[in-house]
Image 1: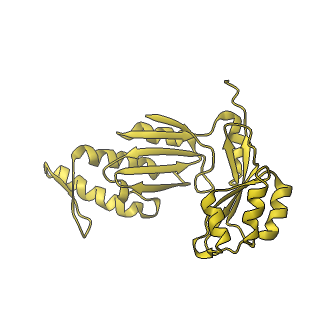
Image 2: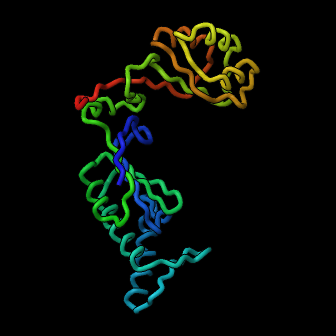
Image 3: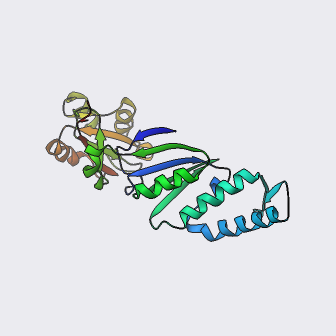
Length: 224
């Protein structure tokens, strides 16, 4: 299993993430655990009846499930019903579980047959992770703030010239600059980095609205 460092809160809320590969990933969701329980109960009855090929009845396209997959999903379910604050995201056979309960997430990892990834912040940066608008960076940042531009937001085309003329104050991509100059609000998206809060405030006169403002925070690694 691979270990990764959390540098930004998941969903603006969670510090930790566990990634599991499981056949029933798309059926596992905290909002529909009762439905998952019904599916597991049906599979259990098939096991009790001595069925060698288990079938998950979804109402549309039925799915063949191995006994190993069934028992794996059952153990995952038994841990999920013990938790109070978490969320999940399923992509194919991959299930990501987000939580702020590290001890519980480790228990879930031990119950799952195929854990793939485990994410957590470094001890030194943990205290900064309570703010959803903080991004931990590996080196001291040249630009302290990251501003997200949203589609349909109005940006003064003159901002593109100002940004290009002042690379020590702001930075963005050529594509974003091109969209700003063309005043393509319906396609406008991207990020602009600003040196500090004062520069960002001055530039805001040319930006009607922004989607999000994140602060880049450097935290030294004490192990280095």
